[in-house]
Amino acid sequence: MPSEPLAHPRLDLDGFVPYRLSVLSNRVSSAIARHYSERFGLSIPEWRVMAVLGGTPDLSAREVAHRTAMDKVQVSRAVASLMRARRVARSGDAKDGRITRLSLTRQGRAIYDEIVPLALHLEELFLSALSAEERRSFEALLAKLSRQARLLGPAA
Image 1 (tube, helix red, strand yellow):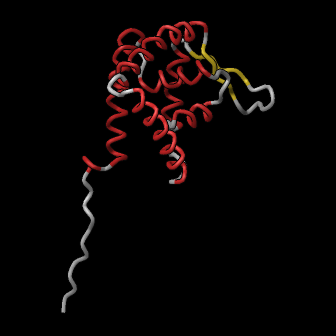
Image 2 (cartoon, one colour; image 1 turned 120 degrees about the vertical axis):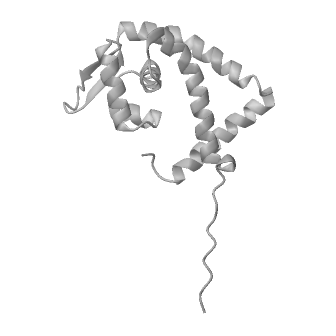
Image 3 (cartoon, one colour; image 1 turned 90 degrees about the horizontal axis):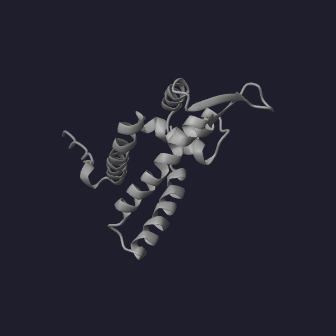
């Protein structure tokens, strides 16, 4: 007697939370990127590197990759492009000669200082759909889900 085929679960992408989060993140990032891309010619990975270094200078490329959850290749390409444009500089680590540290140049800092108010304004516009209570809940939920995501394993 032939056995019946096992039922395979079906993935409904429209209801799959990781997919929905990815799409939302891409839409928001792309909308914001249009503003700084047109003016400064920055890609999303380049801006992410600049944003991290603007808040925390003297990081290694590995630390930038960890903070942005971008893969090493994306970070490496973004850093190379930013260095060619003289927006990021690289220096040796005082304690470990194998490590190089990244920081914004004066030109990079000027661009960062110009983009930050725009990015914050666009974030406020995006979040204006939520009430104050919803924002607090959203922040708490993001923090909770971020902690939970770490249990799934390290990012690629």
